[in-house]
Length: 222
Image: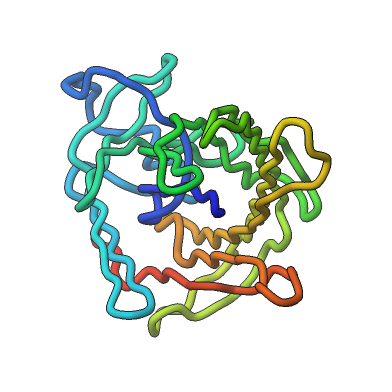
């Protein structure tokens, strides 16, 4: 059994799902111009690629207000999402949370903190849902594991990259040990946001988490 979050941000990035009016006219996105790790406007497009020919485009198509904060509305091949800045980092949207056997179990809010030191941790969302007659709780925890990193992705060199580790654990009510664990590492570069995402899954023989797949930024068009 496997639990994962599909994040529009990167085709992943991550973060808050809300119902809202997408037709608000909020001007020229000044707040995003000043955000260190997110520079975007209507028409900005990120192209991400991965193994086995995977490719997806995420494009800004408008803006709106969520809880009084201006966020951008994004669209890719599969869904509509939202992303923006807050005082310590980036917010975004997970259009759907996929549970056991592919069941859509709800929407999730995530804030990705970037403006703290290495080792800073914070609690993420807690999901509670029922599947196959079992009550399941999945918790997420985040940690900044690296800052100031220089790295090359698809031929482009990025400076001051921040790496955020997200871990999750699924527990069935009445049992102490988790039935599902996982990890996702997000790499953020100034202005362009996510440049790489690493998805980990347990080794079926050892149970140790290993890199299962990688999604990289192939092109950013402001």
